[in-house]
Structures are given as C-alpha cells and as structure tokens.
Image (cartoon, rainbow, N blue to C red; front, side):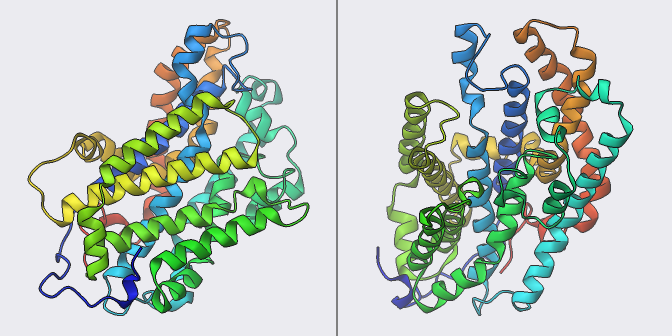
Length: 401
C-alpha cells in the first residue's frame, strides 16, 4: 500500500461537516444480540459439541457456537470509533492529551462494569445455593469457584491474564479487560500513525499481539493479545474513510470493500465447518479472528463510504444496520453485553422442569431473551447512560470534525 502520510491533501474535498453513522450502533446491537444467542445455546449444549442434541438441530444452530468472533467485531468497532475523531481533527491528536483520553475511557466503561460486579456479588449472596444450581451452565461455571483473588482480578481488570480468573464471576467480562488494556496501546499506535502511516501502525499492533504469544510458556494466549491488531484494523478503516489524503481517497473509491466482506465471510463460514467450534489451536483461532476482523473492517468502510459520499443507493446490509430496532439495540449494547448472563440465569429458573434440550432452547428464546433485553435496557437507563459522554450519546446521529 502507498505511504499515505507522504501524500498531499486532495484539494477541494474536505470531510463533510456532519455525517450520520447510525450503522455503527446497528453493528454493535446485532453483535451483542449474537452474544446473547450464544449463551442461550450454551444452556443446552455446555460443551458446544452437540452432545445429546438431534443432529439436524445441532447443524442448524452450530453458527451460535462462536461467541469470541463477536468480540472481534467489537474490537474493530472500538478501533474505528476511537480513531474517528482523531483523523477528523485538524491536529491528529487525542483531545486533551493522553491523560484526559484515559479518563474519558474509564468514565465510559468502568462504572457500569463495577456496578455489574456488585450486582453479581449481591445475587450470589442473596439467592439460595439450591436455586443458584438451577440458574444454568454459565452461571454455575462462573460462580462455582468464587474466591477473593477472582474478585480482585476483576476489580483490577486483569482477569484475562490467568485461566484461574478469566471465566469466573461472568464469562463475557474477560473481553472488557482486554479492551481496557488495548486503550493503553492506542497512543503508541497513534504516534506511529502520525510519524509513518496507518499501515505501519497496523503492522506494529499485530507484531505486539503476536509476540506476546511467542513468549516461552506465555500465559497470555487466553487474553487474545492479537486483538490489538484487530483494534488497529478499525483505526485503518477510519483513516481510509475520513482522511482527506489522496491515497486514502483512492483506497476508499477503488478497493471493492463489499466484495472483500463477502470473501471474508465465505472464508469464515468454511472455517466454521472445517474445525471444531471450541478448537484451542492458536493458529486456527488467529485465522478465525483475522477473518472476522477483515469482514468487520470491510463492512464498516463500505457502509461509511456510502454515508461520506452520499450515494443514492443503500445496500441491504446498510439498510439492516440502520433499521430502528437494530440501532435501538446498539444504544444499550454494552449493558446488554455486561448483564445478560445473570438475567438469562434468572429466566432459566422456571424452565428447569423442561427436559428436552430443544424445548428448553425455545423456552429461553421466548422467555429468556426478552427478559434479558428489557432488563439490560433498564440497566442502561439507570447505570450506563449517566456515564456516557456527549459524543458517545450523539454519535449515532452525527459525527462532526
């Protein structure tokens, strides 16, 4: 790729003063909904291998067994959204400097996270143990070995650094720790972006992430360190879409991003069927994460380009991602991600008399998912929305330079 940092600015093509990017919330919403579906499915197939399930049902629902791929999409989205105001600014700097940036990030994600931890501990203390045993696979796996070190690791956001901590208290929370740690790498990647170019920043990010895997006896694989590279892919997407430099404009206009998205999706589907859903091989896991990252990047660039250039047509994917109910899901996707698991556990209590796994699955879809959605939205209104910055609340309506 061309060295975009060395290109002259394209004259007469400044970024639009206001750009609606509601599809970003749509992507978050659908991705969070998929995570809920994954955990609904896990309640009838804890090993994600189809044990005890009708063969046809297992093959029809196997696409619900790859929850980590949703995290890959969240990480790419995070890189895109954090890079977006930087690349749109006149200085290319973090607003207020690194310290203020970290304060904004902490204010945005940590209070709802700590409130969730508190609610989990209250449920653990208040609900009688016999009832807790009926709250499903995920709840019992998360809370069965609750110790002081587990709680402390979650408070410090380092639970992803040990297999003894990572999936305790609440399984999805490991990725919050990983993303929080990536925030500290972002300023370094920005420095490389300013001094060299965005491609160099992406290369450095993958080098950092993969090198942590190759440390002898590395304990960090469960933290998925190459997610730093996926975050940088999101940064790359923001640069391609919003940079006024000629090389970025050429990439935006000439690269068939929609085709790339389809090819990545086809590769991902093939990969799903070529390996077991819970394969622990690092190489195949990296390939899967990379395919998801490329897919998410291509979708974001294609959709954002339509908004930047005001294309008359609206692809079906963009229409879906901008539909009202999907955007609504996105407005509270972080709350849904944080709190859905204990809500599903509570919803499972009246379903324990159902012995057929397929019937239980349908019961959780009809009872558990609406309960999780409504409960998460209520949590969002009370415990998340007060901590959302003005930019975060309004970005689905407009992105301004």
